[in-house]
Image (cartoon, rainbow, N blue to C red; front, top):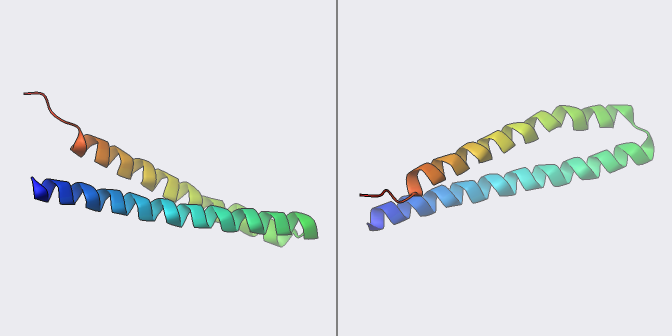
Length: 78
């Protein structure tokens, strides 16, 4: 039972790390987008748009991790 609990904790730690990484990237994106708007910098705005793909990839990875956790942590009726 302790092994199952440890696996669950490891899965949650992975999810937590992914969310922190994604949140940091989004924070950077917002700051860069604001800077691009203030400076009317099209090159910087394009950079933000290009980096959006990475945010989307992380979003899908987070969703997949959540599905794994739900699938493996749900109690099974006997």
